[in-house]
Length: 222
Ligand SMILES: Nc1nc2c(c(=O)[nH]1)N[C@H]1C(S)=C(S)[C@@H](COP(=O)(O)O)O[C@H]1N2
Ligand SMILES: [Mo]
Image (cartoon, rainbow, N blue to C red; front, side, top):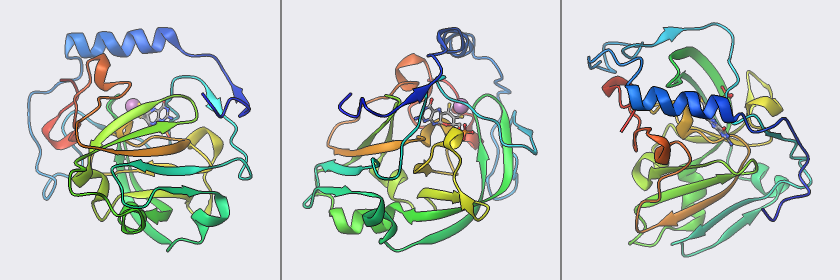
């Protein structure tokens, strides 16, 4: 991609990708039950963990703050291209949320700081025909959301975890955190947000994973 001067470590984990594709084919981990987010803090089939696991395609970009860019493009009135200082000059928010990975782990009470997607969208001004969002990361990862899910009040582009800068392995300098969907919908090392009229399934969505990914509905595969 254009940002090919971003150093990376690691190699694409082809075996892990194949394994996760097979899980989708076999419907692995499905309990066949639904939860109620008001009542059940832990979604069906999930296991609580204390440490924070690292999951990605194996390639971890080293995005220096000076090189970081965040673009909002597509069906917007105002295209946005922010550098690190521009991003940090946006209104800052905090949240404490639970996160749920489709590989079965959940982690409670994660404190994040960053910029609400709603505040970013207030600048970009989505056009009326914008209904979907496609996000691209420095490792080439992509994932998709409806604009409604992306714009919800508890969705943030985060740069800090528990009061410290987000670690590279968790997506520094900036990643999305969308706590109400499985965590593959929260891209690490994010650089581009494109607003679309038609949906555009991302990396896991074209490999057997659900298009929306609601943990309480157990939308693991689709
Ligand atoms: N850029 C990028 N973002 C990504 C991924 C990835 O491979 N690349 N993996 C996703 C998956 S499957 C999960 S579960 C979470 C894991 O985030 P963590 O490593 O911080 O726990 O990141 C998501 N975001
Ligand atoms: Mo995941």
